[in-house]
Image 1 (cartoon, rainbow, N blue to C red):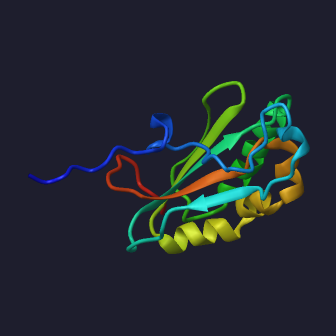
Image 2 (cartoon, rainbow, N blue to C red):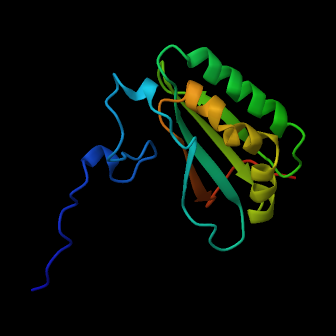
Length: 152
């Protein structure tokens, strides 16, 4: 008889889905507007070359939702001139929860995007601290299947 995998100690809603990763020092929602954060948290590996993507989970500070929408429009304006950025979607899940999904033909295309204007926006820690409740969580992803061309 073999032992099975022990149950996860993580809350079920955090097991595998995209979203913010809880940080032990994270303040309560009532206090998070007073606390600075690092702006962006990046997880995942580059892995082997091939089609790549980012999924970015973004949580607005209460009352800063319009500023987060403006940030998404600013990033969109930057990616229009990036030849390796393929499909790009800025989305809203709820009043304060937003996301970006963007795809690239390879690691070099994704790296070029990070070095560009959209990356500059996320590197602006003052702006990120002013409008985001928590660091934007950037997930590095491999594209397994797609119906669209991931870049040119």
